[in-house]
Length: 282
Image (cartoon, rainbow, N blue to C red; front, side):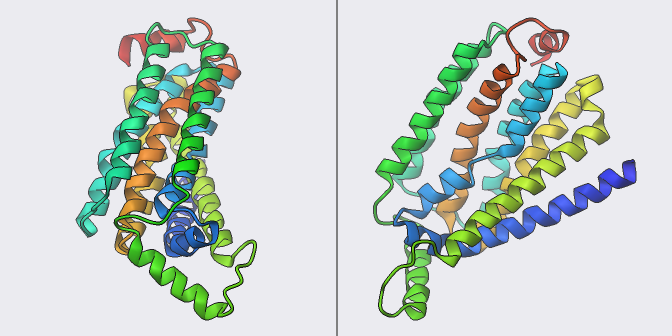
């Protein structure tokens, strides 16, 4: 079985790399199609981490809440410094006030989620409130960011507009562009690859049986690998805002939805053995 899971890791990494390359390559044109900034599109799409939800739901079903909390902590530790560091190693990452604004806006989400789990108990009402706050966060971004691009996006947008003008000189936009479909395909490939990677790491580390610090850290870093590859791909193309947006969006998503999803499966309403482990070690 170990050989099988190692093969799964290789396949998942390949899917993540292909998805990140496809996403970064067609992001500018997709933003033109939707008439929204690249920052908003990156934050809303690249910031979504379905593998985090998959890990949380699996933990809920198996009554191992240490995985859910440990994954949230490990992933958020990894997604903040590592992708930004990788992107900055390739090229400088200039970003404007919009990135700073949404970075500050994500902090209350983290503070509220921390307050909910502080007593070792998160009920369904609190989980529903976390989901509602995240939906409000997304709605604000979508409404505010339907405007022209900003620092770090202009060159990518102009290049995308030139390509679209060459393809369609009459200027009649199609309802769904090829680039938009490719961006969504890239997101799906990254999500599937990341989910497979996390599952393989969980199996190889026996994290569900032991809930060790090492196992929880491995799972957390595995969920962040997708964003590291995306940062590398976007930075090579000069899309600095996409790198920052991915980090901001992923943090907001990871700190809220996995914990909220865990409550729907009955994971956190009581003091299970794994949850007491979290109280002592996390």
